[in-house]
Amino acid sequence: MKLQHYLGGLEGLGPVDFEKRVFVEEWEKRIFGIHVAMMGLSTHLSLPATSSTFKSKWTWADLRTGAEGMNPFDYFKFRYYEKWLGGISSHFIASGYITEDELSRETANVLNGEYTQASGGDTAIDERIEKYLVTGDSARQPAAITPRFAAGDRVVVKNPPATEHTRLPGFLRCKTGIVETVYDGAYSYFCSTGDGIGPAMPVYCVKFEPDELWGKIAEPGFAIYADLFDAYLSPRAA
Amino acid sequence: MTERFNYPPNREALSAARAKALETLLIKKGVITAETVDKVLGFFETKMGPFNGAKLVARAWVDPAFKVRLIADTPAAIAELDFPEGMAGAEGEYMKAVANAPGVHNLVICTLCSCYPWPVLGLPPYWYKDPSFRARAAREPRKILGEFGLALGAATEIKVWDSSAQIRWFVIPERPAGTEHMTEEQLAGLVTPESMMGVAVANAA
Image 1 (cartoon, rainbow over the protein chains, first blue to last red):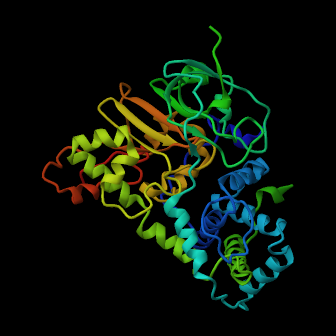
Image 2 (tube, helix red, strand yellow):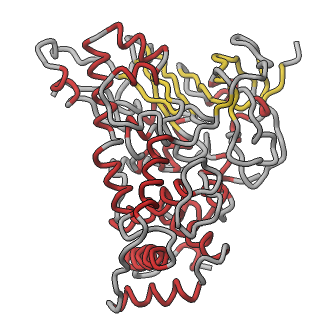
Image 3 (cartoon, rainbow over the protein chains, first blue to last red):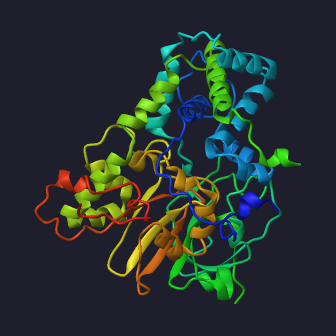
């Protein structure tokens, strides 16, 4: 099991840091912008080709896989955008766009004040990235698949072995819930995770009662509504 | 052993330099342009941000029929208003609105990562991504809301929406009392990102 898959319900973490800012350091904005650019230039999108040398498929799944693969101590140690900086730098190095040496040298240059601003670039690259932001990356397919479940059905969440990336929150494994909503159409995922999602399938909103999730320690008077892919659900034996 | 728990003394300077170095190399190698990052950030400052959500909520407050449509078919209702292009764009491909009402309070969380409805709310603030929030909101939402300064009575049911598939949720808070005289634009000024995620309510002043 991976701790990052089981954050929901984890005890002992203490007070929430009610920090309302999106970025707490200026540099965080830069890595956010680079990530959005990568998503907009990703090879899987049906957007106009540009002269960008970016030739990778890059989606949320890649960033999430990196975060889920971290040592859990590091996951808690590093701030949100510190994780992004690590994961994104690693991708550019592992895929041969840059070398670790180049990045270290350039970093040293910036720290020593010997850095020169890079300039220029093909404006079509930026146009494509904005086009991505405006059009998105829809995973919804026409509904050729009949949903297995209907609103009101009791379902049990499956317990597949951990994979490097999942969209199944650990705290819901083996729990029984009631289908609240069957969403229109079928939804693919960015990649095949190995635990069942990837190809287009129905998605449901499933309601879970607190005592089913947390037993006697449950706080009363609330319910969790989780959006779950079809592959993560089984019918509940009568 | 202690290395795991220590940060380098120049933690932020090092990250800042590394981010700058990475951006510079990517520009030099033709991956992105010198304008790319600023243009992305500008998009979120001017086009996709919480100001869009506030406009939607204010409209829902003054027009009950619009509120019904916003809940029933969120993208179609959003398309009725005069927004910039892209309201069904990145991280807004499938949005759904839920409304608070007397005795019902909604809270949006993402226990696996940081799913957030970009076109209506912009980018997620740090509290939303805080592992403590994500862990505890799934188990003790009433206690968490109390710590955020929102005391809900025991009779109020809390609906916690966990975004683990495709839907991006946002909350239509209740219109505060004493705002009958206010214009739609003034009402929008009362709607905070926190109230549209459910860790706060909208207040009259």
